[in-house]
Length: 423
Image: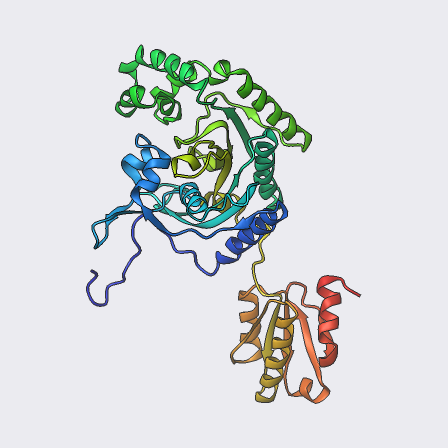
């Protein structure tokens, strides 16, 4: 603990989202919600921690997350619990436990919130980070895969994000993947000494994980490895081709990447990832795929499913402040005690109309206008003794400096026209 008087600092690997940054976060979350709901998704809110086996069972015992990155602790009852490192496992657990598969049919869920991984902190990567994600349970048809990817790309489109690369692949199914797995294991075993220690161990446990390794030597070997798309059975190949055809129908262009396996063990068939060169080495901003066996692993009925997650910190680093509301539309300034009551009255009425309103808490006109400027307000609404006597407000555009005199009882109508273009 810090000594008395010493500044207490945040834990390494986490960050504060300060008021200056919050509008961008809120805008992203609101835009994502509107997009999810436009695709008929409903929000689910999942616990921040679960029993440890929820994640080890879903993510895979050999994954980096389970082996090295989970925040696990024992509670007072002796039970092993883990802060959630990702959202899908918790959503699947909730889907099964609460029997959301009844009545039968497609179930569309989305979530938002913090995740936790004990990773080495670096640019764009934190130990507490935020994700928003979607899960579609029920359909196995390629149209579900295409719609899910279309939903993901629609979120980026609605956030005005461009210059993103969508990569897609098929990982096969339980019928065709074993043959590819054996072929890949034999190839990797012949080059075992050139692989990193982790990948040498993975050859026997899960050779597909070697394709996901970021070590340079392993990457070179992975580039020459057999391609999973060459080993797909007829059904998986047709499923993948149809998914791509449907994506093309809505103008979504995905680049086929045979080395894309994603970092979690539960994926089957379709896998996809969205990246940006602006993010550097850690270039993935979103990813997901199909997981047809996970619901059954959690004790539910056989249920095909597909989903994705977006890393909010990385997404927001691409956005900066573009497109987000940066300040209030209106900043009220009262120059006398009598005006203060009118300011409260008008500000309250405008908030009820949906306007974003702030106000000053005293000072001269010059200092209060500086406050309005620092708040990035569009308009300053000034009321003093003269304005009270005439029942008007002086409205000043902060950027242009242009001023307007508006009667109190006409203010809402005037603002609707001036700011919203309504007659």
